[in-house]
Length: 312
Image (tube, rainbow, N blue to C red; front, side, top):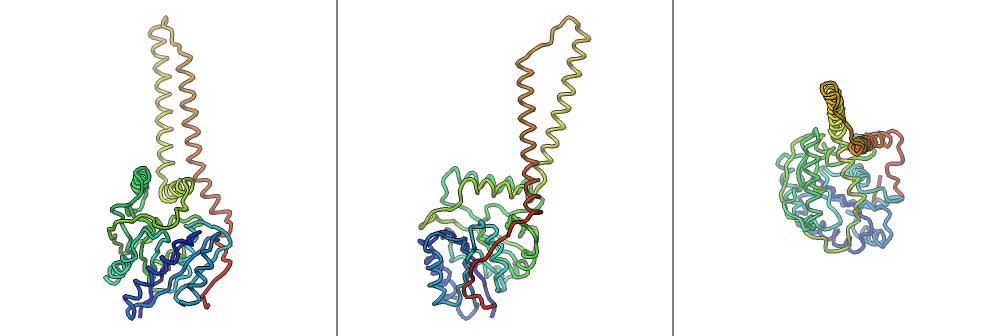
């Protein structure tokens, strides 16, 4: 019998965690006898009752496994660590926000049995506010436009990946992984499943604006050299423009000696413009250098404080 692993990242989800467990259990109870399953919860050092609730569930259900981290290492590292501990023939990432319908899991499994190694949820509609919806859609399209990989649009973390993909994924030595991009770069046969993403019914989002900005920058820096290439092109264009303007001023002065070419305000504006452009370029270069710095001088990726229901 094939085995399906489900991984769920949690941080202060005491209100929702029982429903997360129940939703997944209901799905696999319906296909009991066809598949075995395990549900691994990765806790980022929750400060509420999340871990105690999970331990109580795990004491009654051996399909439930828990990894408790020593601190909050963030969702990307947590998810990557979860893939390293799955034992199934395929793994499904199911978020603790309950926004994604657990009822779609059998559809994912059906596509997997049909030969697809990656099956991802493609959001046709969400309940985000207008600004967040616009930012998310713009992010997906900007990253795809600049990326060397064909990244799926409007696809989050809700996905199924085959054991072959998992094995390749966990080989990658990326200190700050953009997992969606990594899975796309690995290849294999992939398909999207369209669905409507619901609202969060319990708890609240843990994704701050700072995290979302960092996530977006990491995605761009990880999967494209386009930003720094654009800086090079703009720098060359501005240099050419400045050189052309200087030649034009010399020609005009030689042709019309008595003409007075002045304009202190213009000079100040141009200086400020070029100064601002230089700072922007330095910032872009700095992001790439920071990514290299993180990769070279590695801090602990994830430290596991406690394991529950792991027997090896």
